[in-house]
Length: 151
Image (cartoon, rainbow, N blue to C red; front, side):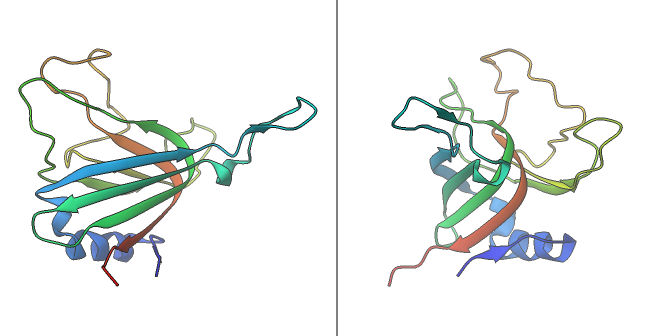
């Protein structure tokens, strides 16, 4: 069963349920754009809510969790980093209404694998950072989640 993050109580619930993502790691990420080329060579771009990311995380303390981001606006995945582990010590999860410019107040949800992440002032240091200053983050219209249990 999928749970949707609609408000601050929902954020608190998932963070409590999954221990703030402490001692977890990203196992897989799958992106869907909704775009395709039809039989006549016509390009379909996909609607906003067709852009989605499914992410599976494992934890040392919990069952695996799946996050489904719908209406993805930005997705930045950090892969291998020299001299750093891939474990997450704490995640960031919050709503923002200030990310699409001064004349827009769209409510977006932001998840990052770094608990002190702040999307309003985040600047990627380099394309590939030697000091692990970059983090994985996703900005989307909606977030659904579910605990993966063996049936």
